[in-house]
Image (cartoon, rainbow, N blue to C red):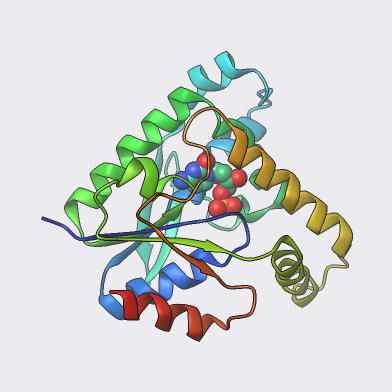
Length: 217
Ligand code: DC
C-alpha cells in the first residue's frame, strides 16, 4: 500500500514549501491540491462565469480537466492540456479558488482525483481537508499554522521581491478573510484533524519546520 503524509493549514502558512522539501527528502511525490482548486477558479474567470453562481460553476467544472505532471523535477498543473502553473498564482485566482472550493460537486471531483493519485504513489499532499477528508488514513498528519501577521509579512516580502509595491495591512486583512471563508464553509472546512500534530511556524525557520516533521516520521 502507498504511504501518505497530509499537511493542512491556512493560506500562507508555508505548506507547499515544507511539503516539497519533505517529499524530496523521502522521495515521495508532492501533490498540491490548492493548485487544483485554483485551476477550476481560473477556468471560471477565463470563461466569464459568475463564480457565485453555484449551479453554473458546478456544471461548467465538468469541462475543466485538471491534471498534474512533473516537468524537470517540478510539479506543473495543466488545465485542459495547457500549463497554467504560473497563472494560477495570481491573487484573483486564489480568491476565486476559495469561492468555488465551497461547492460540493467541485470538491467531490477533486477529492476523487486526489485519492486516485495517492493510491498509486507515496505522497506528501497539502491542502485544507487532506487529513480530515481526502486521506483519513495518512500515517502522518500535520496542521501547519502561523499568525495572520507573520503570514502577511511573508507574502509582503514575496511580492516586494517580485518588484511589486504591496500594502501590508491589506494583505493581512485578505488573509484573515480567506481564513474565515475556508474555516466556515459547510463542506470539508479547514480544521485540524483530531490525530494531526499542530506545528506553529510563526517563529520557526523552514529548516526547523522540516526537521520537526521529519523527526515525527
Ligand atoms: O493553498 P491555496 O492557497 O493554493 O488554495 C487555494 C484555495 O483552494 C483555498 O482558499 C481553499 C481551497 N482549497 C480547498 O478548499 N481544499 C484544499 N484541499 C486545497 C485548497
